Amino acid sequence: MHEISLVRSVFNTLEAEFTKEELQNLHAIDLKIGLLSNVEPALMQNAFEAVTSAEEKFQKVKLNINLIPIEIYCQTCDKHTIVENYKFACGTCGQPNNNVVKGTELLIHQVHFDN
Amino acid sequence: MNQVEKSTKTARGTVTCDNSTMHLLKANDFVAAAIRKKAAAENFLLLNITSSAGSGKTTLLQETARRLGDKINMKILVGDLETERDADRLRSVGADALQIVTGGICHLEAQMVWQAMEGLNLEGLDLLIVENVGNLVCPASFDLGEDYRVTLIATTEGDDKPKKYPRMFLTSELLLVSKVDLIDYLPFSIDAVVADARDINPNIGVIEISSIKDIGIDEWCNWLLDRVAEKKAAKKEAATG
Image (tube, rainbow over all chains, first blue to last red; front, side, top):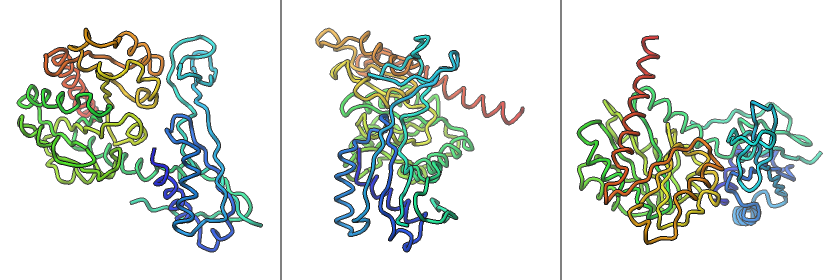
């Protein structure tokens, strides 16, 4: 969707959470991105490179993207199903179900510092 | 508004982040929650209307304003990248409309709605409709604090749209199939579009409409009036109970 502004949002979030000194030791950021988030991983990597080089910060930091599949939960069966081809139905009973429990993530999951 | 408290964790090695503080759309969701609270306090229904560009959102809202203008107190916020054209069209039929010019941004964010709401008199308001930027992708990810999201698909688009843009249909309460007066001239199947949408969202409501030929508009207006009445009743119940 608007990967540049999401990259800026990653930086703003980290800058609010950690001190300048701490961020000097940052070497990797792990994002969790759900398949329903409308974010394209390749564009996110491009945007990350563009913003880090334009703003001359976080240049030695690596961006890792974990894609999260869409998962629904059926209360009747007490079962989780991974949604494929956007067919939102319980894999056990086959009933239509859009109780999405995973797949909308747009999160900073972990950050890795030196030492 | 979006003040984040400094972490007490030591930034060494690997730090696993708290999902509530590290959500990238957190600023938007924070403002959306504030809008929802305001709409509850002022007791009006907030709708977010989305679709591709050119599916007939503004024409539908012109017709809606004509019919409901003297029945309920409604106002419209309308988002576009540039120009005041949609707000002008809505005002031409007597609607109380305010344009949000996003200046190139492809969706409305909660902050824009919040700012626009500050320019509106909310007293006695029954219904605030936000007409989003024409786009089925980005608006899907931005909560505007709405009670319901309503999405239009015109018969002049493809009937395969829901699975191409799943998040929008997953989060919509109602699907309006618009321009149904043209159905005889187009390779568009209403059954196919409804089946596709219900694969994603089995509970999505469907109304077939044509704003210029007056098809389904009464049903749509009644749907709106019912939702407004429901919200008012819930508030009354909360106040007395």
